[in-house]
Amino acid sequence: MHPQIAGPEARGAAARAGAVALIGGEGLGLEPGFAQISNEAVSTDGASAERVASHRPPGAIVIGSSGTTGLPKLALRTSASLDADAAGIITGMGLTRNDRVVVATPLCHSYGVDLLVGTLTAGASLRVVGRFDAETVAAELAAGATVLPGVPFIFEALARCSAARSRSLRLALSAGSPLPRGVRDGFFDVWGVEVGQLYGATELGTVSMDVPGTAGFDAASVGRPLPGVSMRIVDVEDANRLLGAGEEGQLAVRADSMLAAYLDGEVPLTDGHLLTGDLATMDAEGRVRITGRLKLLIDVGAYKVNPLEVESVLGAHPEVVECVIVPIAASETVQRVRAVVVVRDRGRPHIAEDLREYLRDRLAPIKVPRVVELVDSLPRTTMGKVARDRV
Image 1 (spheres, one colour):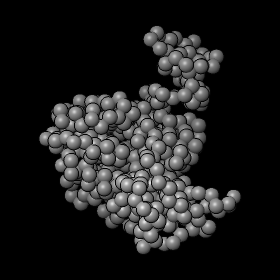
Image 2 (cartoon, rainbow, N blue to C red):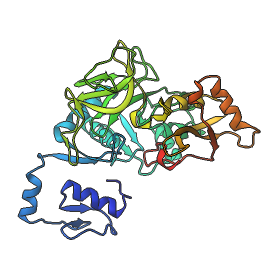
Image 3 (tube, helix red, strand yellow):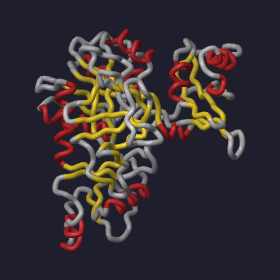
Image 4 (tube, rainbow, N blue to C red):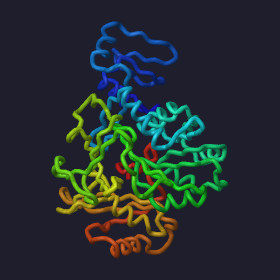
């Protein structure tokens, strides 16, 4: 769990997991029956130990999902799952003992777990940045880092650093959300390194990546499946129906690294493949592009608007720094599209209407935001993703 988790959240997760002890700081306010481990060892009675052993395989961790496919759940990942995850990271990134990997994402997050087990299994050096700071990461790059995994926000911040190009950085990969072209180009201009993308999930580990410099590299893609991974596109309404090359549907994945179970819910599967909740397409060569999320679709009348599509078009406007598209309630049953935008110059006359006009020329009328709201910045999660529920 995140070290800054609130007491009620920690207690709730521990109860759902059947935990008998928590390692953490003061102030968690544990219920009777929980033991707290700080600097002293804790022993549990035999009954508690037997209760845990009865429904946990040996060697496993539990990771909380973000709830992107529903309410947050607790995913059980066995040691065999983590071994497979590490093997995929090593193969995909080409990690060796000579690599120095800089991790600026929380190690409690599934992405951090992937990088932790992959780097250490490869025998490479792991440089952990406890709290992201662009200048600190830039210093690591200048000091000999060879691999930089991150999220779009990290690459955007590093593109603003006035630093010399790194002579050692050989690989940069982004995950978590689509990497805007402007961010990718900005990072390349400063650091001289192309950024690729990878795909993973709490339930799956890392399952695909598109590494710059490889044959057929597509900067907008998350790549082809890693060894031991099967990816397919299925119909949104009928998960048993497979779609063909270029058709958009829901991404379903089966992997050796996937979870054994949820501790608090059923795993949505079709033919052994996890239904991810992500919309995607796959080309004839098996390369996947993420195009949206099922739960993010905005229901405008009988028409579904994909916010990522609108964000992609709006984000290409030269005055837009970043943006997010969210629904706005027009009535109890009707939604409209709202754009929340950070622009380079908020004082520019008529900028909001200019942006709407820009979209009218490029999108169907139903996709054009009814409201364009200008803000100084967008709220973010600890992983650097835009917190849509706080916009």
